[in-house]
Image 1 (cartoon, rainbow, N blue to C red):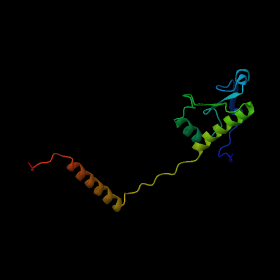
Image 2: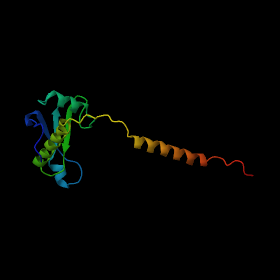
Image 3: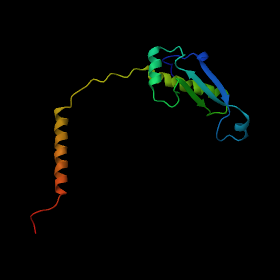
Length: 137
């Protein structure tokens, strides 16, 4: 895993072990190996700009009150699932840490304008040919 852009504090995360869903035989019924990670964005020590961008994300893992809930259940090891959940939370935070480049508005080139108008004229001619034939009887 690459170096995190904004390191997270593990003491701000809340973990709970739950039983995993799906295939796994008897192990699934007996062992609580899946991990629920809860991370409150407003109460975290993240910079304010990052908090705002996280809360503005349209992500189903973020609740209305700003808590990120991640469920990790891919492995049979509780510790591996815990590391997976932390890694996914870190990826989510890192995704908003990089500011998108501001767009510089540009005008369409003369060539692209000409091509557009030519293609519109061609389409218009094709559509004219679809009309009723007149004059020859």
